[in-house]
Length: 192
Image (cartoon, rainbow, N blue to C red; front, side, top):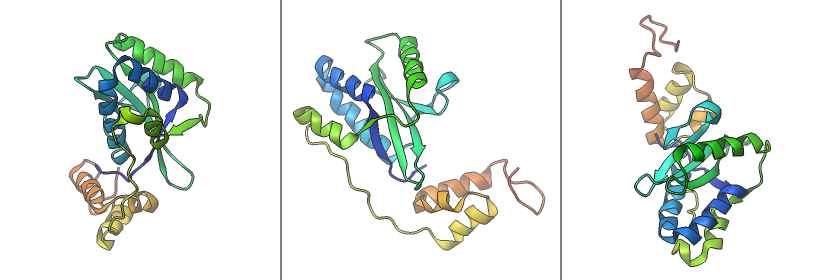
């Protein structure tokens, strides 16, 4: 489902991971940056993590040898911020070691960690980034009123959440709602 574009920020340790990656495997850096830009457009892409890492997601890069691990944080004003917590390769460490390191990072993160904007990270990489840059948010058409009403009043989603979706994402959400077990068989039709 398409989500509103999020601002991608890297915690300092993840920015360091990327810097180290430039030194060890500069060819993979562009692929990692492309994935980070993709995460900016689709913050809920990838697989959710479990255990101590609930709330985080992962996405693989380059023949599944590299992992990007992040969480999506909603700011008080409703903006989405993707906090990239780790960029690391399975080849460099066993997969279990990656998740052990990630669990350690999560446990030691302050509530509001210092982060670096993806655009600044790309700029700092210079030629390695090969012209990649963060795009400005694009204008999108407002949701049709009928769809907004059904998602808010029938499906019970928060108005603010629904208004943040583009038309395609809102339609996907409505289709998932009407085809799920959330609709009772009685005339009420409210979620269970």
